[in-house]
Amino acid sequence: MLEKISNINPQDKFKSGTKVLPTNPYIIHANDYNLKKKDSALFSPLAKLMSKINWHILNLEYPSDDEMLFHFLVDDIEFFTIINFNELYTNSHHEFSIIKSGFYKNSKVNFEASIEVQKDEIAILEFPDRIEISHLKRFFNRMEINEFNIAINQKFYDEITLGIENGIYSELNYILKVIYTFITTKHPDKIKNHFILKSQPNIPIIIQQIDIINTD
Image 1 (cartoon, rainbow, N blue to C red):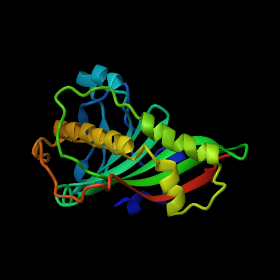
Image 2: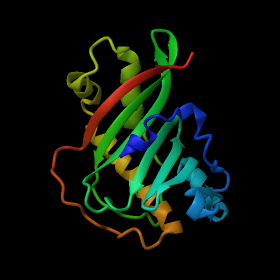
Image 3: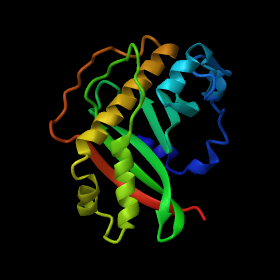
């Protein structure tokens, strides 16, 4: 799903797109939607809610008529994801590209992880709580401590997610519900509240890939 953004340098902050101002969340003004396929967001009526839930949108675009691309920040961790409305109710997993700055052998780097999470429910939140990502932080901290001294393979993925898979699963599913809630402010007919997907149990997350990129 994220192939469309795999070649984007996250440090460019989507320079080709329209920035979203985090201080004015939750009202979207389309800028020539049919031609540019992108929105700038000025969500002033719910700005206070935005700051309370610890969610800062950096960019919002429409790669196609049926997709919304979200680029946002929670604490010091950066997220990219695409909501594809054609697959929303058929695909049991959702993919995130997640980036956190850190250090690798005394050099400043970006740790980049592609994670698929099993969707528990498509639902909107009447009163969203603050987004907490303590398990995702532990996930990235383990990478920094290990400094990739072992090969980046399935065994490594299993080791750095040991005991925190369900926590990452819960955090990413909560973020998805925040996104669904956000979508209803622009497209209220797109989300079927409390929709349960048929999925295989005991596969909470799938680590697709981990990369380190030197930023020095």
